[in-house]
Length: 71
Image (tube, rainbow, N blue to C red; front, side, top):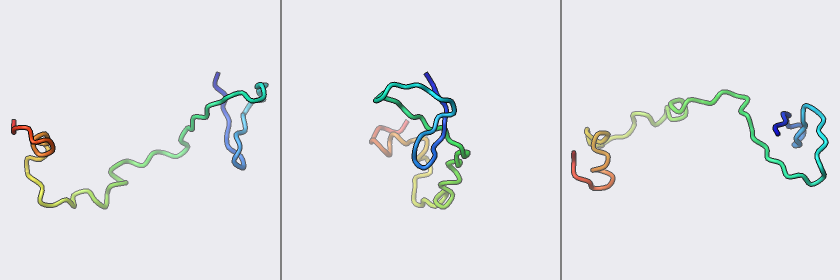
Protein backbone atom coordinates (compact mmCIF):
# COMPACT_ATOMS: atom_id res chain seq x y z
CA UNK A 1 0.00 0.00 0.00
CA UNK A 2 1.07 3.57 -0.56
CA UNK A 3 0.36 6.37 1.89
CA UNK A 4 1.15 10.00 1.22
CA UNK A 5 2.38 12.50 3.74
CA UNK A 6 5.06 15.04 4.59
CA UNK A 7 7.84 15.71 7.07
CA UNK A 8 7.10 17.93 10.09
CA UNK A 9 9.79 18.57 12.71
CA UNK A 10 11.76 15.57 11.46
CA UNK A 11 8.86 13.09 11.64
CA UNK A 12 6.67 11.60 8.92
CA UNK A 13 3.07 12.83 9.11
CA UNK A 14 0.61 10.93 6.92
CA UNK A 15 -2.19 12.78 5.11
CA UNK A 16 -4.82 10.26 6.20
CA UNK A 17 -5.05 8.46 9.55
CA UNK A 18 -3.74 4.91 9.20
CA UNK A 19 -4.02 2.07 11.71
CA UNK A 20 -0.64 0.35 11.41
CA UNK A 21 0.51 -2.28 13.90
CA UNK A 22 3.19 -1.20 16.38
CA UNK A 23 6.63 -2.00 15.01
CA UNK A 24 5.44 -2.27 11.40
CA UNK A 25 8.37 -1.91 9.00
CA UNK A 26 7.94 0.89 6.49
CA UNK A 27 9.84 2.32 3.51
CA UNK A 28 9.88 6.02 2.72
CA UNK A 29 10.40 7.14 -0.91
CA UNK A 30 11.08 10.84 -1.32
CA UNK A 31 9.39 12.74 -4.11
CA UNK A 32 11.39 15.78 -5.20
CA UNK A 33 9.47 19.00 -4.61
CA UNK A 34 11.97 21.16 -6.49
CA UNK A 35 12.80 20.76 -10.18
CA UNK A 36 16.07 19.00 -10.84
CA UNK A 37 18.98 21.21 -11.87
CA UNK A 38 20.16 20.40 -15.42
CA UNK A 39 23.55 18.69 -15.53
CA UNK A 40 24.92 21.41 -17.83
CA UNK A 41 24.07 24.00 -15.16
CA UNK A 42 25.93 22.02 -12.51
CA UNK A 43 29.00 21.63 -14.74
CA UNK A 44 28.99 25.10 -16.33
CA UNK A 45 32.25 26.09 -14.62
CA UNK A 46 34.20 23.18 -16.14
CA UNK A 47 32.53 22.71 -19.54
CA UNK A 48 35.04 23.49 -22.30
CA UNK A 49 38.01 23.87 -19.92
CA UNK A 50 39.87 20.64 -20.78
CA UNK A 51 42.99 21.13 -22.88
CA UNK A 52 45.43 18.84 -24.66
CA UNK A 53 42.87 16.18 -25.56
CA UNK A 54 43.08 14.27 -28.85
CA UNK A 55 40.70 15.63 -31.51
CA UNK A 56 39.27 12.14 -32.14
CA UNK A 57 38.91 11.34 -28.42
CA UNK A 58 35.16 10.90 -28.55
CA UNK A 59 35.16 8.63 -31.59
CA UNK A 60 38.20 6.65 -30.42
CA UNK A 61 37.50 6.50 -26.67
CA UNK A 62 38.14 2.72 -26.53
CA UNK A 63 41.57 3.26 -28.00
CA UNK A 64 42.50 6.00 -25.52
CA UNK A 65 40.86 4.44 -22.46
CA UNK A 66 41.57 0.74 -22.97
CA UNK A 67 44.29 0.54 -25.64
CA UNK A 68 42.06 -1.05 -28.31
CA UNK A 69 43.15 -0.55 -31.93
CA UNK A 70 41.72 2.55 -33.59
CA UNK A 71 38.66 1.72 -35.68
